[in-house]
Length: 328
Image (cartoon, rainbow, N blue to C red; front, side, top):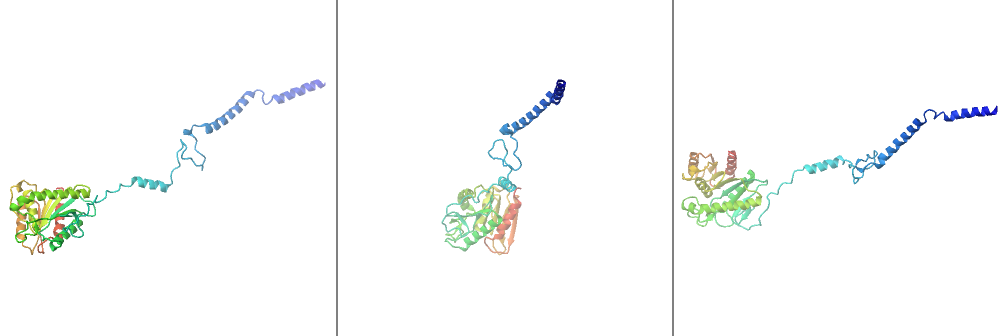
């Protein structure tokens, strides 16, 4: 009796032992092993990934800027804005003027006007310019101080700075002033004196222009030539004979001349003529205007209630007139 019971117990135990595996042991084990494999692969992916494809760090973890394959953190907005401003900032403008020559000792240039050399003064405006005025004074007496010299250099420097242009004021030659002024400086206004002195003087003007261009740092692209009194007559003679290439001319308190063989061949240029109602040059100045108009030159004549000499209003009007014709 005991053996069958034992035998039955064994059978029942065997059934309980084999129950979980009976008919499905292999699938259950395979599923367990598969889950373990996925876990192992996940660990291996993080630990053994190549440096160039490493997974990003946890939120809040710092990234080392030197670690290869990892992008650095974006800079703060203020830093980024400052870097952008520096990168997009315009280049520093070139200095103006580019250089200054050594100080020149001369009695020709008054205070507030620079000396290019012993016999030439110059003016540069505050801002860069490519326009140059060559201005020829009237007769001036010898000596360090004179009303004529002070007036003309003051007039030219103020008007040129106001117009934003550069100016050259060379000194005339002794012996070219009218009779009775043998020691004064003047210009060759016509006849034999013009034939002898005009070309060498114009060559000197070109040399002084080049020296001023070196200081300015660039060549001047536009040249206006003007003068008062003796200088006005010399300017008129140069214009009528084609003695100097300029973009415009001006004769103040002077000017005259006659038709020349060259006049018909010259390209017309704007010519300003200004004089005082109390001066004696009105007749010759008007005659010059008629001569130029007959050759097709644009001319402006202005009469003011002044006497003789350089005046700022003449140059102010001349600059405005010349600029009306720029680019035509």
